[in-house]
Length: 217
Image 1 (spheres, helix red, strand yellow):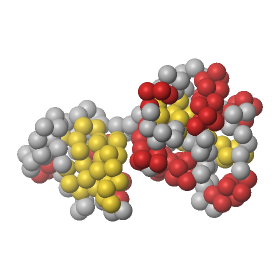
Image 2: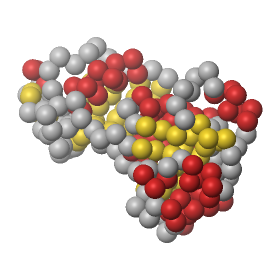
Image 3: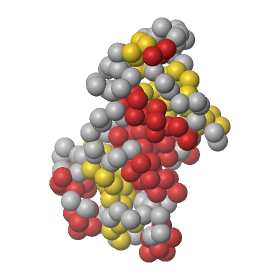
């Protein structure tokens, strides 16, 4: 079982809100900060968790999220400067919080001096943002089509699939284990899924939860 993270997301636009939904689906606790009340109204019917209306660069607003207890803050607004400011402010309240900032050009090294992770979602979408936030044992390599994800998944200790050969595991239709545990060969029927090792998996979205339960517990 993966640990539950306490995540604060600044910005409930397309990227921020989709990321929040993905993280919630993975079992994490998410609080959203959004300054635009019309955006808050738009997501109200789809989001039942905490939303704080206000400017995420305002220290009083950040403090309302319980930032001192948060594991991660992800600033995913449409403005790079705002995102960096949010992360830096959050770090003042909680030096241990992981900081993730959305940027608008693919120049990660310029920004990782100030934050722990950067995402460039114009290139990769909300799934990459969710992976970066979770510092994840599950990484989406690409949204190949509208009906297929390619992921790197680490097999968790005590997961149902751990220590078993592929021939012994009843993966749902729509799943393909692509690589063996060293990534040098295509997986074979006799490939054993070893706890702590990572495997490339192609999976259709409607069976992702089943695959995750088998490989992550």
